Amino acid sequence: MFIRLVVTTATIVFALGIAAQETARKTMLVIHGGAGTITRASMSAEAEKQYREGLEASLKAGHAVLARGGSSLDAVEAAIRVLEDNPLFNAGKGAVFTHEGRNELDASIMDGKTKKAGSVAGVTIIRNPITAARAVMEKSAHVMMVGRGAELFATKMGLEIVDPSYFWTERRWKSLQNELLEEQRQKPRAELAYPDEKKFGTVGAVALDRDGNLAAGTSTGGMTNKQFGRVGDAPIIGAGTYADNEACAVSATGHGEFFIRWTVAYDIAALMKYRGLTVQQAGDEVIHKKLAPVQGEGGVIILDRKGNFAMPFNSEGMYRGWIGADGAPHVEIYK
Image (cartoon, rainbow, N blue to C red; front, side):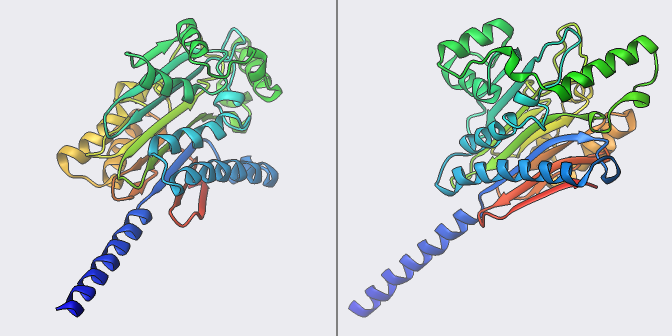
């Protein structure tokens, strides 16, 4: 009898150990850094190296959170903050300029467990908009705050505030001047655009933590030469960002007007939840069958509770990557 008890206890301990390992294995982080005309021909070896290093740094930051048992929300925020601080990407420090010569930033984040969400739009002095979006979600009764109001709220919450000049980069300034010149000459955008500007610069992340909870986040500097207070899909829940534990987590990058009108992020989750499609099937349905025919260019990253993910896009390239529990980062750029 005693021997049976010992064996039974050992078996239970062993089983618990296996279960714990399985739980740890399912953690996953997927990121993107923008989609568009991104080809080997338009990028130098050094530039590609820098982009890959930037994406890997983001993956490692998010993975470090998941590895120590942190939440998917923490991982998403950590991964996106790294990209916001990297001038290579159109978010935070690398934001593009509006027609008036300003950097206006948008971001959103969503918790798949509770469906709580937060976003900010048109902010100019918040160093990390993704953190401001999370503050809106967790420390206010609202979902979205814009402009001066969002900045006042972020200041009140003790977030890092910077002078607008912090976001100024020569590369993005030249891009604006190029766009303004195009307007004056009334020439097609493709004639003068820098190769790396013919893309939709947005960064985003989706994560799955040890508890099986999903989260998604997206951040952007918008479109070069945007006017009239234009806001894209990145800060709009259901368009550029969505997370639901019963379906998936989604972050999008692309021509925002199309992603808003086709409610891309939510549509993908709905296809999975109500039609039983896989992450790949749902992503292909929306990106290739719905958006492509109407020239809605871009892509998404999608992750479900089992750790399955997809990264479909209909442009020539998309900065993207993933990292599992083994801590090995994987980065891709071209088709």
